[in-house]
Image (cartoon, rainbow, N blue to C red):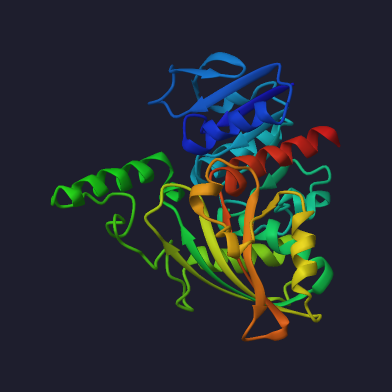
Length: 331
């Protein structure tokens, strides 16, 4: 089996390599594709030392599958070339997510949508983390409304975003002016209620992605969804405060039990012992942590509230993509 990774030296690309090994995916040839600037570097992988190569049309010759994590422009340029050569592609960018004929997949929710598609899109990290936790509730109780506030880490901007946060934290402590390159404002000791471009309705694109993508993944555009996305000064793992209005009367204990048994979910919900989801615990973990589960004071018997933390680079990106690949190979 021959697999290529486009964007292999980036934060998500490196996590993809880790996930491939962790999930036991047998690879006979692994090609690591990069920009011209990064080509020729040697990466130490579970599959041996591999030299990176520049992504050109020839990169895809003879590949069976390709994982893309190099941005929308690269995806638009090279995915048509790859699929025309018979390569099945999983794309982590937003380039094809909203095309009606391209499956948008969280494997724990809608793996069956993959079918024999040549291209499958990976959802936005915020959506993927929420979907794993919400779909089991949706299946039993139905969802009328989702109101979400996010607490998103610097890892959204990759390794350079995390480095900027660390550097500006040191600068703050040294009473030195911050250097801002990857965010709208300095993130150290700050919150930024602005992620991606503002839309005509005054929501940002990041916020609207949660609506658009949840509708597509759940196959249910009737759910009313509102999100406020906030960048916070943590390195890695996004968190989400989620308020739900359900179709049916909720049983909070039953929801806890459902989530306890749901794949991809780790229940952390014992407030008496100080156990609840946090980015520090979710970092580096495959499962999405869910806790603070309680009946909603707003929606009463038809409402539940919860708090979620999940690793943005893993569940929100690399792991989701590799689980899609795993499903493709098995089916």
